Image 1 (tube, rainbow, N blue to C red):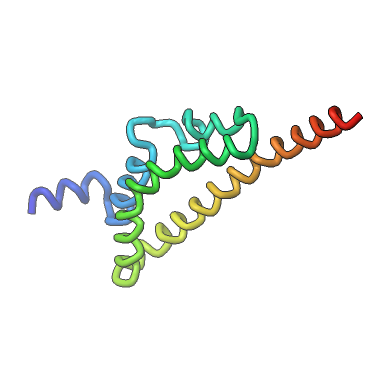
Image 2 (cartoon, rainbow, N blue to C red; image 1 turned 60 degrees about the vertical axis):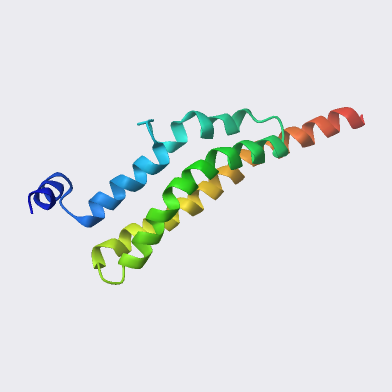
Length: 122
């Protein structure tokens, strides 16, 4: 009983505990928000779309590998724990936001390619 009481004293709910585990699984030892970490920031420096995709895949695959089991736990538990439904929805929103970040980073690359091709076609 004491261990359970300690966990609830620290986190307050299963939702808070699982949310913290998710953040730690993605961030690992880096306390900065994900968009400010080195891997995601390197996307802005990619020379072309192929490098962007390579950097994005290398960075995100590690986080997904660590987080996937927890996502499955949240998805399964949301049926019996109503408080987890919003966490599950947030996890899916964050996944879609990550895709959007990659697309936004690719847009400047496309613009640079267009400028280069115009410059060389003159």
